[in-house]
Length: 596
Image 1 (cartoon, rainbow, N blue to C red):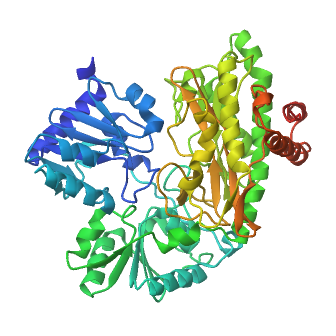
Image 2: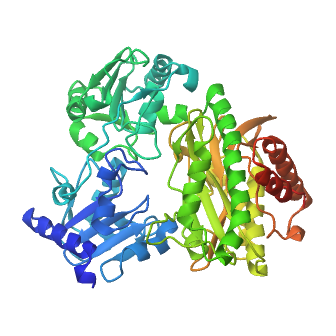
Image 3: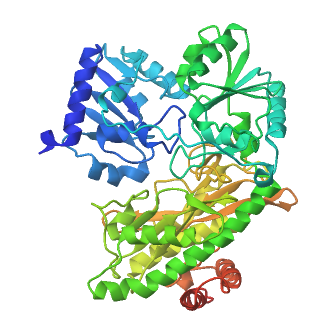
């Protein structure tokens, strides 16, 4: 059966193509040319080659094996999607590709890769590894997968749309001047930018190239005078630019991007780019003599700190989003049990459709901000589970249900998670749920000094779980954009070192969890903005307002300050939402926000 599967056929085709190009192996990353987490359908090459649909990973395909590298969110999912008879599995971070290449006993391997889809930082590590093992990285002229993928979708051709200063809070020309001043201070002549959310923020534009992400796939350079070259498909640029803020922006075809890099390098310009988010093809175009400064993009750093207009929009759209969440909770509690008993159970797909429908009724809603994670029972144990027609599971009232979703609104981006139970739960579950809640509350109430970084405070959220010898294998918090990416870097809370200080104006999630494979998942997530508390200390101000289920909480495990925060939060939720939801949701809201 394995040999007749689509994956087996595609692996065989890839291996035949490697032989024709005198290659022994191929690196297939999840990335597109923009090093993005979310990619357009036409760029889902890893999914086509392997069947793995997660948002982070890569494959190494040789003539006799196919190795999939995924992170802790996908250890269960990858085994379900990619059969063990065809694939082996390694941890993307703990057992990275560079380690595999360094320690392989094979010698003289010619390992192909597309230089537009490998970050410059990865290339450096992979080169060092292959040199040590006496193997060779070979940049291919074309993408091998694209030649084999006969039904590859066409890129989206929708037009860019303006997102002017009234919504963004600052005119694009002013932003460009600010970034140019950063370049002067850093002795950089030309900033090379290929992160679509950074380009969207800088130019005050939005688009539809990628589902859930309102931006355009393109490239950009900006010099120290603020002059911009925007390398974008001409089909995506409207003829009438009256409402755009593109004065001083030269619009160029994408094919001119790498030649423009070569021209700047030949003119002895100092180029600046982020090696983690820039394809190594840029480095190749600059040549060995090119002057390059590596570091985070000045746009990334500036965009991370929201202005007053952006923060106001984020606050407002989260209050509206709470209406949809409250209606969802009321619907679930009212319908899951009766419909299951009647033989017509609610399904994961139905809930995913329900939350989108509820959000569509809200002012300013544009689209979801990511695939709804709608996980019943064991499916909830997969952190980034995506329900399909094949995996669609009924909501059994005896099982736990995990729901993680968010929306793109005209004035901001939302993302929250709640865990629901519809019957009595075990003592073990209640301990786990309460420990996750305590970790959430520990960060939500934290006061921290200036010069604090995300890795400094990650353990605070894990400590309640650690006390019962449990943990979770994902980050505790990520940045969120303003009508941009729901996963915005560089601000982050996690185990890994992060050199971005947490400062007022940043928006982050707080989302500890716990997962039991084959049984259930627990996660509680709100978004917060960082605020200045005075005296050199900062704290988290709540953005998300929707009830947190408390029926499985063990009150005796909560300290009084934890109870006080939760009760105050629920009192605020009730006051904000009681007059904006249906009669059924009002009853649910009153019940679920009772103090404990």
